[in-house]
Amino acid sequence: MRNIRLDICYDGTRYQGWQRLANTPNSIQGKIETALSRILEEPIEISGSGRTDAGVHAKDQVANFHCESTMSCGEILAKLQMYLPEDIGIESCKEVSPRFHARLNAKEKTYLEFQPSLCIRAPVCDGDSRAAGCGPDEPRGTGIFGNPRFFCVLRQ
Image 1 (cartoon, rainbow, N blue to C red):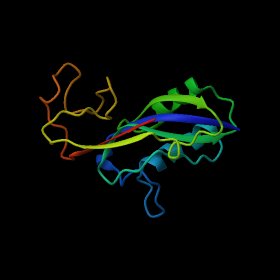
Image 2 (cartoon, rainbow, N blue to C red; image 1 turned 90 degrees about the vertical axis):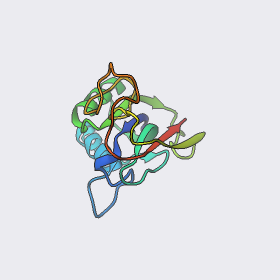
Image 3 (cartoon, rainbow, N blue to C red; image 1 turned 180 degrees about the horizontal axis):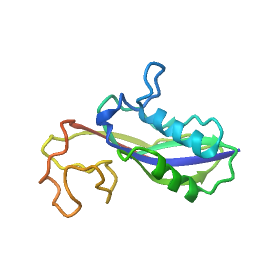
């Protein structure tokens, strides 16, 4: 069984937070699991390095999942980028040690609060301005992106 690590970023404005909930399909974890299960044609459950509340954005959040599929990580990444909503981004996909666990192996979790007048790209991945309130050539801080003030950075 393979263990796959995903580095994730997202604009959480439209979501009920990270964690999959029984009463709503509108979570980041739920969206990614649904896409992976469809792509890999097997049930997938992901473990995240941490959770965010409703409306909170994340950058460098790490998750992992186990699968039987032999699909390459590059192909998984390309298909995730195609199937996920544009406010959820997957920055990387790579095979890791079978013992790796996103939450248990996390080295640092940083929660930052930004003023709403700062320009935050959506999803909050570097170099990706899809659905953003500012273009890639505008200096940071010149545009206004929504109203949420919180941003989560999780590093491994």
